[in-house]
Structures are given as C-alpha cells and as structure tokens.
Image (cartoon, rainbow, N blue to C red; front, side):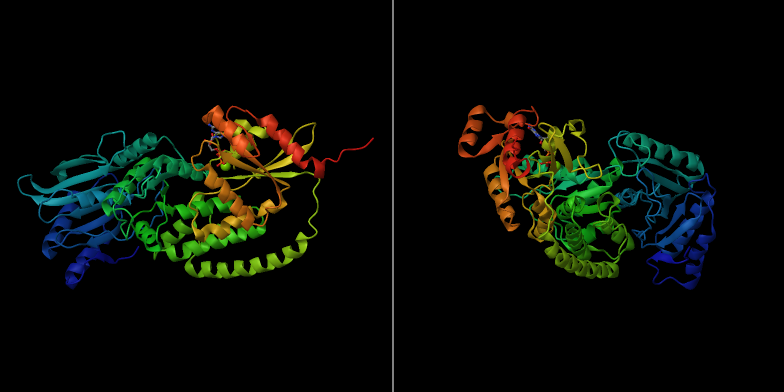
Length: 551
Ligand code: GDP
Ligand code: MG
C-alpha cells in the first residue's frame, strides 16, 4: 500500500500532509459503514485545509487511498480493476467530506456508478441535526426501482445503525439475482450492448443494418443484450457520442452485467482510448468485431497470420496509457487475444510480434508456392458455400448435414464446425464447408484479412453462391461476390447460384429469378428445393469425382 495522497495537495503544509497520511493507519470496524470518530476526523481536517477530503475503504476496513480535493470536488485516482467481477462491486467505498453542507451530487453518483464502488457517502456538518451528518448513495438493480441508485439519510452518523457487511452482501445478492446468472462459466458468450450511431443519410435502413450487425455478433459468439440507438448531428471527436450519454450507457450496461460495449462504426484511435479511460468494460468497434470473426474463421496458417497481423496493426494505435487498457483491447472478444495469442501484450511486444509474423508470412508463402503445384487430388469433393452474412449459409449447412438441431445456437461451436460430411446420394460423401460471410461496407483496411480467410476456397471443387432472395440489395451483392472471387482468382471454379429464403418472396418473383439466372431456389426454413440442390451438386461434380464405371 502506498502512502501517497491523491489529488490536489499543492499548498498543504507539512503538518496537514502528515495528519492526512496518518489516516492510512486507521482501520474501520468491519461492520461499520463509517464511525463517528472517523467522520469527525475527516470533517476537522477538511475544515482546516478548506478542501474536500476522502478515503476509499476496503471491505476489511483498511484505507486504500486518502484523497484531497478542492472546495467543490474530489477526483478519484485510477483504481486497479483486479477486484472487479461481473456481479460484484469493487469492494471499495468512498467516504468524503462536503464543505458547504450539500448532499450527494450528480458527480458523486456518476463516480459511484462508473467505478462500481460499494457505495459513496458524503459527510457534512449540521448543527441542527447534531454534528456529523452522512448521506449515503448506493446502486440498486434495475428491477428495484426506476432510479439507478438509492439513499440512506441524510442523518446523523451516530444514528446510522446498519451492519455494513450484511448491507453490502445483501445488495450484491440482489444484483446477482436480478441479472439472472450466478457465476461466469468459462466460454460463456459475452454479453454485449450495441451502441448504434446510424448515419443520417437518406434511405438508410436501420432495421436491415441492425439485422446485419446482429448476424455479425452471432458469428463472433457475442450475445446482444440491448441496443442503444443514438442519433447525433455531429460525431463528438472525443467520445463519438456525447459524454453524458456515454456515461449513462456505461452505467446502464454495468447494471445489466454487460461485458462489452460494441460501437457499430469505426472509432478513431483516440476515441477508443478516451472511452476506455472512463470504463472498465471492453470497448470494441465494428472493425474489431469483424476482425474477431475473421480470426475465428481463418483456417490456413497463412490466413491466421494475416488476420492476427491485421488485428495487431489495428490495436496498436488504440492502446491507452493504462495497463488495463492493454489487456482489455488485446484481450479480444470472449477473452481471446488476436489470432491464437492469449498473451497480454504491451506496445513493444506487439511491435515485436508484428515483425515476427511478417517474417513468418514470407516463409510460408515461399513454401506454399512450391507445394501448391502438387496439391493432392482428394478423393472426397469439397463444396464451399459463399455469400453475404445473413444469407443463410450456416442454416443451409445445418439443414443439409442433418444437424439442424443446432440451428439457433452458435454454429461455430465445435472443433471444426464449418466443415461437415454429407452422404448423399447413394452413400457418396462430399465435404460441405461454410465460409466467412461477406460483409456490407467492409472497410478497406480489412480487405486483405478478409481475402486471406477466403483462401481456403482454393481447395474447393465447387462453390455454392448463396443469395438471400428477399434482400432488396441482392443484385449488388451478387456482383460484389463475383468481384471478390475474381480478386481471389478463382473465377474458373464451378459455381451454383442458389437463392435462399424463397418463403419470403412471392411465386412470380421466384419465376422471374429462375428465368433470369441459371439458379436453384430454396428455402432452408421450409426445407424446399433441397433435393433439387443436391441433385445439381451431384451433377456438377459427377464428372470429376464419380466416373461412371463401365461394366
Ligand atoms: P449466414 O450468416 O449466411 O450464416 O446466415 P445464417 O444461416 O446465420 O442465417 C441468417 C438468418 O436467416 C437466420 O436468422 C436464419 O434463421 C434465417 N434463415 C436462413 N434460411 C432461411 C430461409 O430459408 N427462410 C427464412 N425466412 N429465413 C432463413
Ligand atoms: Mg453463418
């Protein structure tokens, strides 16, 4: 424990400093929120130096910090996040003086909530009420009342007869119950709150945008608990949205047991740093979410390295000054680091890792270029499904492989979840693989990483290009998929265009599609058209894989 004083200590004489430091020797009785003696001592010191004085007290009654403010306010030092869990408070309570007899302020309550303090108490002098008066604020779960917090007092300290230990334990239990979970299970999906800041363009379809984002979260194994839609005239250069709104959002998230704040657009490096500096929640923007999905889906060694490189390059300028920020950013989503790395990296180590990976990439490319020529012709044909996120790729994979029991769950939860063997027809096998989905408005900085994850398509014998027939933008998307495939130089592969979700469009529309395109129309939902699709697959690969045996 350090014996430093925190805050504004300039202009204090030595005696005052010593008396303040002596507070560190105190130990509050376990069951007392604050004793009359401590209250008296703080008020006297405060009056003497004409400033607010505060202490942060642990559950054991020891004093972790003594803080000196000015007349109006006190600033809490950066606290270690060690004790911070999902359902628990920080295990520190703030007890501080007010010089002008005012009650708890909005600022006090914001600190309480943002820092997840056990409670915050202010002490003041009131002759009428009999000397030392205390006003206590504490957080309450969402279902208890509309407000975020509740109060004890103001009342004389000597009449504060609560047992602090019971009080705080009961309160924590109440939070745990309200959130509906007891313990964090390893590998449990992260609980996320989406902060959506829709652009003010004409014709922007918010529902469609949010559906896409939800699909991305699904792919990243993130559970969206709530969406806050924030319309702004001008993005705030520091926090994207207004600071007050941000604080409110953070507090609400904490109350809901959220782990992750996801912004649905790109945050500048300084915005991420600023937002991270006022909350312990993980702060992630859309690009990081997408990179995380790529990291999960990358299969080849080269793709994994490329994606990790992209992640590290993205993170580097976004690292804050504080250690915690490092681990939060480099912790990735779901506690995973970039790529396969689980390390907490600092700037220097990130730079080292980047150059290591760059070298490694060179090596692999060299070796692979020679290997590719003698790629063995596998005896089992590989069929890969490509298409935009949300077109139904995972659903199709599940339906065709008969593992549809898993629909609705995270489709990528097993070891090699995106490749399955189907035996159809006549007990012949094909390997069906799902690929990372195409994403609308893919930022150009992510293009290379995206292409890397699609590298596996080189090994496919046939592509299924899946299109959501009910999507207004389906034509643009078809063109875009073809464009990317040509970037990958795999245009010469056989391809079947498949329209999915025909249950959502009318018959005539389907007929027109069938006239215009050489395609198969299906509905995974109603299991329509699947036999036709399988027959078509069969036809396309029959020549290369199932030579007709002559008797
Ligand atoms: P992916 O991102 O391409 O893997 O798409 P998903 O397989 O996750 O499906 C996206 C959404 O479309 C899910 O909500 C599915 O339930 C839904 N979906 C898939 N196939 C159909 C279909 O044939 N009809 C309808 N109405 N919805 C479907
Ligand atoms: Mg999918």
